Length: 310
Image 1 (cartoon, rainbow, N blue to C red):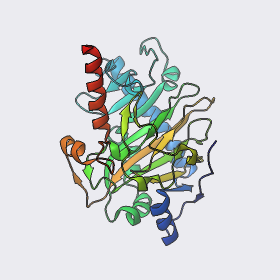
Image 2: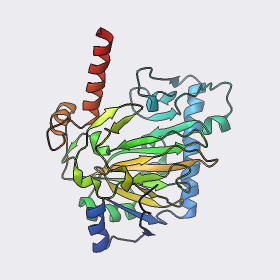
Image 3: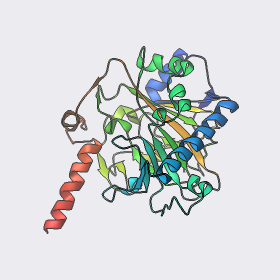
Image 4: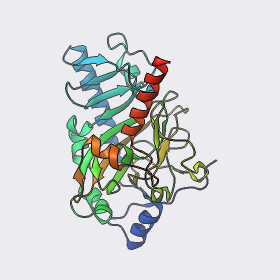
C-alpha cells in the first residue's frame, strides 16, 4: 500500500518560495488545473488526430508498420515511425496489429505512446512552449529552459503496460545530469487503478541508482525503499513537475478507463550535451557502480553473449 497521498494544490501563476523549497526537498510538485477543460479536450483530440494521420500514411504505403525483435518487452510492440527519426507511435507489446483489418477504434485502444509528438502536431508544439509552463519551470531550472524531448502517453483499458521504477536521468545525455525537470500533464483523470504516476519523495537525493535491463530499463532491486512510494492521482488538466533524478513508476491499467498524458522533458540552459561514452563513464553510484541505462544495456549484452558461449 502507498505510504501517503501526494500533496496536490491548485496551479499557481508562479511558484512560491515554499513550493520551490518543497521541490528541492521532495523532488516533485503536483497541481490541479494547469489546463482547463477545453485544452484537455483539444489534447485528447490531438492524440486521436496524430494516430489517424500515422495510420493513414502507413495504410497508403508512405510509412511502414514494423517492430524491433531485439527490443526489451516494453518496446517490442508494433510501431509506425517517420524514417530516420524517433518520431512515431508504438503499440502495446504482445498485440498483433493489422492496419487493413483492424478498425480505427480498435487501433486507438491498442497504442502505448507517441515519441516527439511536438514534431507531428501543433497542439503539442504549442504546449511545450506554453508561457505559464515556463513560469513554473524557470524558478526550478533558471531562465529559458530547453526542451530536451517529449512524449504523448496512453495506457489503454485493461491492457496498458506498467513502466517500472526508473530515473530519467539514467537515459539523458547532458551534464549536469540533475539539472532537468520532467513535466507530466494528465489528459484523463489519472488514478491508481488506471496507471497514475508514483514517486519516491526525496529519493532524488540518493543520486544515480544502478539500472538493469528487464522488460524495460529499471532500477536494480534493493536500491530503493518502495514502501515510501506515493501515488499522484491527478484530475485531467493537472500537472506533475519532478526532478529527472526522482525515481518514478506507473502501474498497469487494469480498469475500463484509458489514461492519456503528455510528458515533456526540460534541461537548464546551463547544461551541455554529451556523448554516450561520457555518460557511461560519469553516470555512476557513489561507489563508482555504473548506473545509466546504457550501462545496463552493455551488462545485458555481455550476459547474453556469455550464455550463448556456455
